[in-house]
Length: 237
Image (cartoon, rainbow, N blue to C red; front, side, top):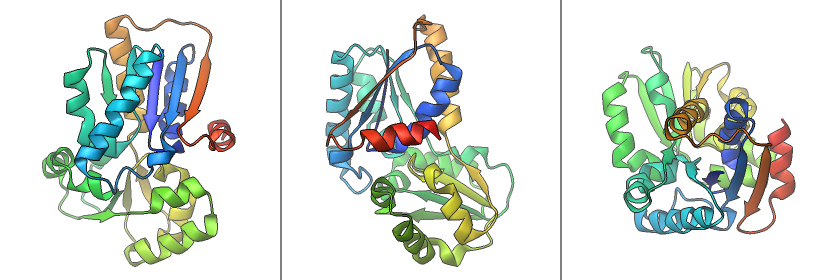
């Protein structure tokens, strides 16, 4: 069984890619909306929260964990891999996929941008024409689902960057609002890590002999017990 977790329903963008590559598997998706957003918490809090979620998923029978949250991946990945024996797959912002020197905007949480993991990635692939932008509160608005508030936030936060060519979506919530981002910035090339992490998950499962080819089953669990309808709506899009 594959365990997937995020600070809310944003990780559905990762789950959808997993389902394309691994359609005949059993999944548990854990939406930790009661602790959303992770990006504004301390590293210690993020590690503690992630640890509890992973332990919960393992106790439910998961044999591999996919961290569908850039913040938790950046901060807690090493701790979790050192503690648990099962494979822990982590997502990262798809900045290395930007192969040109066009003006690029990286949208992510404060914790992701400030993490050592992202700094190492950024320094390695820096195209020397990149803006790093912390988007505190945006994941909350996406969870809320109020498009007017989202557009108002985006106009205030990223309106000045109209004309950028590339946008790296460094939070799994952000691909859910590509349309709204495009309304503010105009036509852009989007990059996110969902497909890459799904491919890596399949590779690891093949290597470890974890693929079951059973009947597809998706169990959704939300820590605040109020996101189920939204989750299945987004899963069908």
